[in-house]
Image (cartoon, rainbow, N blue to C red):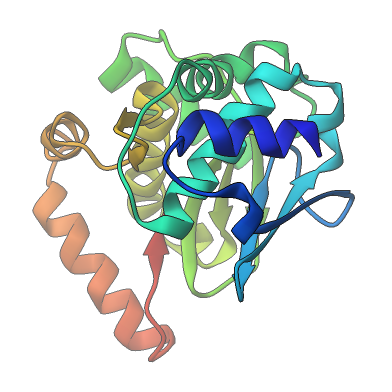
Length: 218
C-alpha cells in the first residue's frame, strides 16, 4: 500500500488521500507489462501484469501515476513517469526473440531494407485471427502481430507491417502524462510508403468485403 500512497501523494499533494481507497493486484491474466485501473466510488484498483513484480518500485510508481492521471483526467509529469516511459521504450532490448514466421520475416526484411536501411531490429513476429485488428505492436513482448486476413494480399501486408515497424521505431511520446502513439512525425513517415493513399483505399475496401466491423491498426 505504501507504493500507492506515495504515488498518490507525490502526484496530487492537494488531494486528501483519506477520501480514496487504493488497492493493487498482480495478475497472470495480462500480457507481460500490461496494466489497467478500475475506478468506482472513490475506489481505485490497479491491476498489473505479474511481470511488474520484478521491476523497481520507482518505475512501478510511474506506471501507477500515469493510470491515476487517466482516472482524474489531469495533466502532470513526474520523475517516476519519466522513468516508466524510458523503461517501456527500452524494454525490447531484454526480450527474447523466439516467435517468427517465414512469410512475416520476408515482409519485415523487405520493408526494413527499403525504408529503414536495415536498422530496425527484428522483433517477435506472429499471426492472429482477429478480423478487427489488422496489426499491432506490443512493447511488453516486442511483438508485431498481423491479421491472417492479409495473407491474401502481400502488398497490403507490407503496408501494415510498415505501420507496425513505425511503432517499434518511434515508440511513443509523452507530455504531461498523456501518451501519443501516432505523432506528426509518425504520420509524416507513414505517408512515405509507396502508394500509401492507394493502400488506405485497399484497407477500406477490405473492410467492406470482410466485415461491417471496423479494422484497426495499433
